[in-house]
Every structure is written in structure tokens, then in C-alpha cells.
Amino acid sequence: MSTLDLFADEHPTGAESIGPQSVVLRGHALPHAVQLLEAVEGIAARAPLRHLVTPGGFTMSVAMTNCGALGWTSDRRGYRYSAIDPLSGQPWPAMPAVFVRLAGEAAAAAGFDGFVPDACLINQYLPGTRLSLHQDRDEHDLGAPIVSVSLGMPATFLFGGLARTDSTARVPLQHGDVVVWGGVDRLRHHGVLPLKDQPHPLLGGRRINLTFRKAG
Image (cartoon, rainbow, N blue to C red; front, top):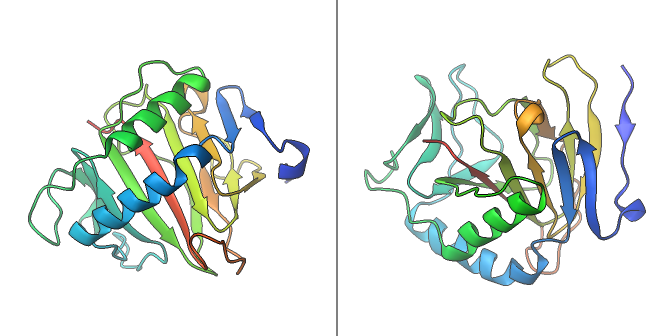
């Protein structure tokens, strides 16, 4: 299978199309980065990052938590959304206004007006951490896009097709980049290659990814 490599230095700013209804908004989150990271710390203080177990019994290398009306979780019983954090027995922390505003603006910039997320998955990557190819299909509303914000260390985003065996594009992502996909691309497989140890001035050896969804 052929692999399409897209290099960030060819598109240092602005929007970069990676599919019929998929786009990378280079640096779109940079003006809000400090606010976003401060909000992440507050959320993690109430709903700590954790390594979830898959239905197959594997422990995910990515540490995660959630904010918003719904949070994504996994255990031996399956993948699902829940209004309650299973660790605390309390509702997930509310989604900060800066999160909602950024997600809506990014979606609109990609052609998806009126996007209001009710779930934000917060993933923490360390050197060597990866995310295998998968589809986001646990949401009730598949008509809404996915908005994914990268903060901290750079990563290589894998963007495939509707079938797991389709070829994948390798899309380098830097601090502040936002990926939006929806419409005909909504169920495309995607993942992240193992992170290289390239410390970032704000986050050191960490990458934080915010993934906004309309789950309910």
C-alpha cells in the first residue's frame, strides 16, 4: 500500500486539506494554548488521568480523562460514554468555555457550522506512546465532526480510509495545530505513530490532545 507523506513545512500556516471534508488548521489553537493547558490541569485535578483497559484486556498506553456532559471510557465490558466518572462516581468536570469556543470556531473554519461538543477526551502522550488505527463510532450523532487539538510535543497523525486496510496519510502535527474531519470522512480510520522524544517548551516531554465530539 502506498503512503502519502504530508510535511508541515510545506504548509506552515493556514488550512491544509487532507480529505474531501477533512482539514488541518495550522496553528489555530496557538492564541489559546496557555488557557487550554491551565484548564487541562484543573480538569485533571478533579478527574485524574488514567490508563483505561480495552474490552480485550489490554491497557492503553495513552493516559486520558474527560470533561463535558459525557465522557468516553472503556473496560472489559466495552467502550461507551457515561455522564459519570467511574473513578470518582461524580459527573465529569464541566467543559471550559475556551474549549467550547475553540471547538466551534475550528469546526466552522472547516465548513461545519453550529458544532457544540458535549464531550472532550483529554489524552496525554509520552515518548513512545502511540494510538492504533481506529474509528470514532461510539457517538450517537455521526453527523457532527471531530475536532482534535494538538498541544506540546509534535506527533505524526495517521489518517486512513473507511476500511482499516486502506492506505494512510502521515500528517505531522505541531503545537497548536487542529484537525477537523466529518461528513463523508467522519468514519475514516486514524491513529498516532509512537511519539519521538522531542520536548516542548511548555509541556516538556508530553503531548496533550483534546478531542471534541458530539456524543449524545
